[in-house]
Every structure is written in structure tokens, then in C-alpha cells.
Amino acid sequence: MKNLSKSIEDYIEAIYMIEQEKQEIKSIDIANKLGVSKPAVNRAMNELNNLNLIEKTNYSNIVLTDEGRKLAVKIYDKHILIYDFLLSIGVSKENANIDCCKIEHVISDETAECIRKQIKK
Image (cartoon, rainbow, N blue to C red):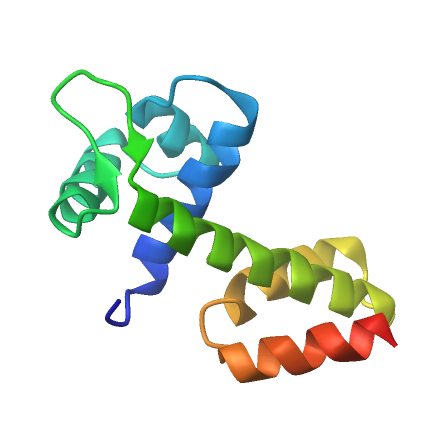
């Protein structure tokens, strides 16, 4: 998949995280999770739908496609990996959470894999 914006990756990750808690995902759930407006969520959902990362029709639930779920898991995995790594080197939980949300969008798969190997040692 082509490079997606940080914003789009945040929406995919948010959908995945909400999905872990709820059966049905609505735009308002995503707006609340990300602290954005419903119109912003609707624009993002249209883009995700056009990219075949979600399935959504007007007034329906939002569901990740297989491709969307695969991407969401990859983004979320990096998030958790970086968060755990930052905690392991002494970063506070608050800063680790803030920093991992920034780092997860720019870190390469190679770097993530090296961090994973380092943590397992």
C-alpha cells in the first residue's frame, strides 16, 4: 500500500482499537477516540472507503476490510512495540504514549524489527 498520511493511519488504528472494545463502530466513537469532529471523521471514512480499507454506507457501522485490518494490526503492533521499548528505557508512561504515537508513523519496518529483537534479548 502506498504511503498513507499520519492522520489516515491514526483513523485506521483508532477503528481497530475501538473494535477490540465494541461490536459496532460508529463515526461518533472514532470522533470521541481521536478528539476530532464528526465531519472530519466522515471525510476520513470516505477516504478510507475509497482506499478499500473500510466498508461503510450511510448510517451504518464501520468495518475494516481484510486489507484495512492487516494495516491496522501492523500500525498497532508498532505502537505497542515502541511504547514498551520507551518504557523499558525509563521513559514515563505519559511521554511514552505521546512519543510512540509520533514515532509509529515514521519508523521503518527494519527499525521496528531491530527494536523487537533487542527487547527479546
